[in-house]
Length: 267
Image (tube, rainbow, N blue to C red; front, side, top):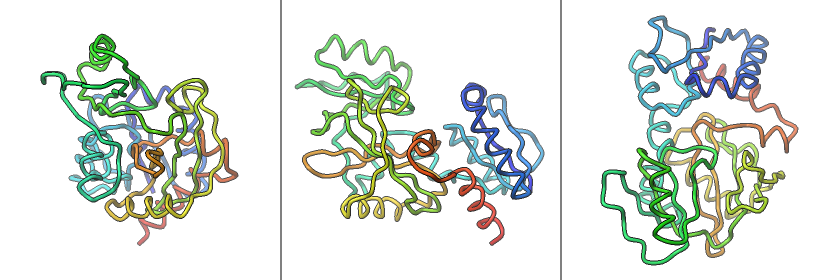
């Protein structure tokens, strides 16, 4: 079978080793991958399937409209690549999140009556431009740094500097990694956070199950934070990275993902 690995050019440059892993593991399963850069559009040819590794719901929709099986699907891509849409969808389905306000850059900035708060771009990734603000001046500077993106504002979680990513394959959890910040309120691995394998508690497992029931995930990451003594959903990563998983678990998630894709296509 012929598959596309769909990236934006900047993402492909950062993730060449991950692309190589797909190509290498794919050969063992008789999968032939082509790297497709979607910045300038898509080729007219038709693969047997596509793995979209870009935060581009428009690209996913175009592929689906051409009858190409896409991993993840456009419903996941459209909701989970925008934090405001993620929170809205989860809240509408009675899944706990930290309270939020969302706004667009052209809107009148929402009033903040108490600090500190966290502001982050709706379509950001890896903790980029996620900022802890303490006053109106920092608020204005953070909005300018995020421009022109839509943004969300939230109060701090009551348990700072610790969160967990749960890796989902075929709509089921396969592993979890706890991230612990290193002198920063953000615990992202890319920002120096420490990581360790984690076993889900009953409450955490039940929360993940509730999220999976309202999506059809192929491969993603669900991030849990802890607020007022309870686990809450922080983000859902459609284009989830795997470095933390390889650093903490003796599993080959790329191989597992490709085996899953082959089985799903053969059905």
